[in-house]
Length: 267
Image (cartoon, rainbow, N blue to C red; front, side, top):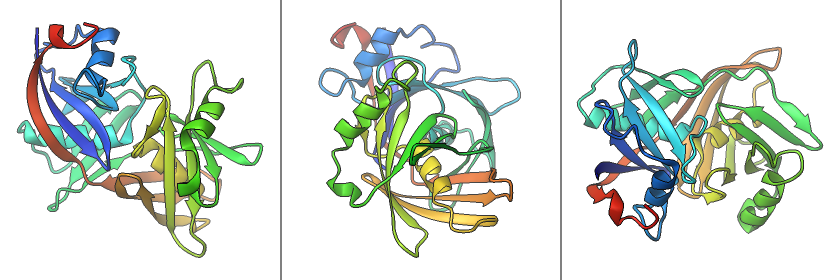
């Protein structure tokens, strides 16, 4: 079977995307997806997405982690699949699509920046001196100093596989807040990839919500990741809930190709 794909990246978070509106690739197995995402023997990616037909929406986003298992919401993936839809000829002033955590809206501006509306967040929980919240995927936020000096793989792996989180997993974000500023730097250990990624959209969103600078009303947080810069805009309510959350940043097509699945090691 020949697999036609397009590679996209959003601040270094990279994905394999395929047009599945004819259900051509619905039979992909966990082993096949894992092999396609392998950086040595496959195409290489943090995850794979299928763009599906969905009644009442412009499309459906079906996301798989690099381990081949179906994943939860991916923010950078949502921005990349929106740009993919545009390249497929699906042109909308506002996109409406369905993902694993429900409906989403997205827009592409004149400079190609993709803004994705994320799910509302009702509350942030404290865990010891850290934070836990769900922005479409579960995230553990740890505030640190000198995040660039941190062993993210070891410390993230230890938290992700700790007794509390080993069974279902959690994404671990290390956040350096800049004093008297709306800027933060974020590094992420991502479950399903089981390694540090260059960027994580739901993780950046979670980190930004924890780093609000206005107790009530509009907030905008500028975020630096290993793969580039993103911004998160949101409204914080008096009860500590968050609404009208938008993740904004670049999403770029890298290359397009075809591969015989039988040529990929392990398939």
